[in-house]
Structure formats: structure tokens, C-alpha cells
Image (tube, rainbow, N blue to C red):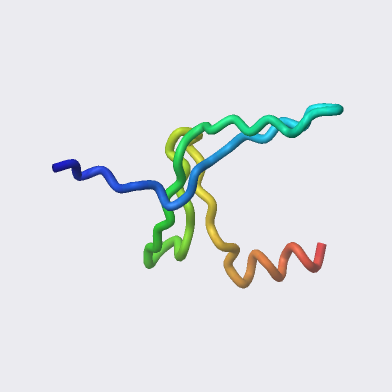
Length: 65
């Protein structure tokens, strides 16, 4: 039995093409997670990316700039 989790999302790179449908290139999976320190987020291991929900103070700083 495998210990690997199934991805929560499938990750695509979408390339617009003139006069044709956009080209969707599947590049990996993404995994939803939650931690006490970071909060809720999504990890995309194949791209070494982590998406986090903004903290309240980050949201306030963005709107005041």
C-alpha cells in the first residue's frame, strides 16, 4: 500500500494562442494544508511554491499603499 497522498488540485500552465484554444500543460499536483504557524495554504512541490492566505496585517498594508 502506498503512503503517497493524492493531490488536492491539478496544476496547469496555460498558454494563450492566437486564433486557437489556450494550451493547458499539466505540470503537477498541489496539496492543501493547514498549520498553526502558517495557517491555511497550498503547496505545489513540483514548482517549489507555497501559497498562503494573507494575514490580516498583510491585507491592511496592501490596501494602504
